[in-house]
Length: 230
Ligand SMILES: [Zn+2]
Ligand SMILES: [Zn+2]
Image (tube, rainbow, N blue to C red; front, side):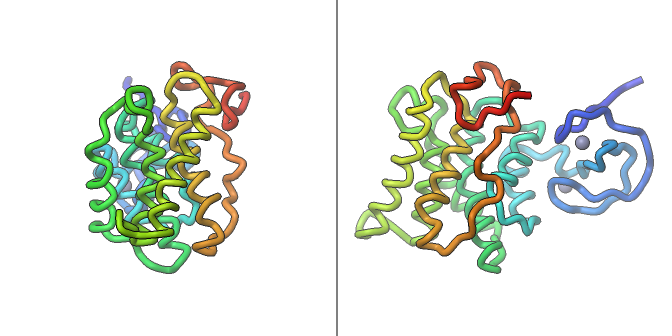
């Protein structure tokens, strides 16, 4: 008999017909399999691509913590341990959290705009030219929220400063690439730099505890400030 595991918590799913709420997008539908911890994936989320799952989660959540949102999306089966999908993830989750805090709903066009700005960052740029795509995502979020461009004064500096500080954070931790670490560093840096300017609350998920600790190849373990021993 086939067994299925929950992408969110790893428990074996139970075959049980019922009306379930999707843990990713909040859709309610009839399902046949449910996680013992109540997690459920609707059919559309189950088949979603990387871009689609980012959009489905962001458009349907009232979550105000980008770390929680990023963790959920990174557990989706379309997400790999490493890959450019992490470049696309950072800006939408930051924007969604800030919008939700400001009682403004994120729209599909906002997410597309984030994707557009991330789509020309190749895989492995951390090592090949020194600009991790996830860290750039934190600067992109600043740029969009402060409506910065290359002619802006203070806003332009803040865009570059946020990306630079995120890069500094991951470079100081050392070691080989870890896209989960880069996502956490990017979000954490954005919040540190923009908290007062945008009047944002303190994130409950900080200090960040990596939910992928020891699970990804080349996990830096104790060398990474987000690592938690299990
Ligand atoms: Zn589960
Ligand atoms: Zn769903």
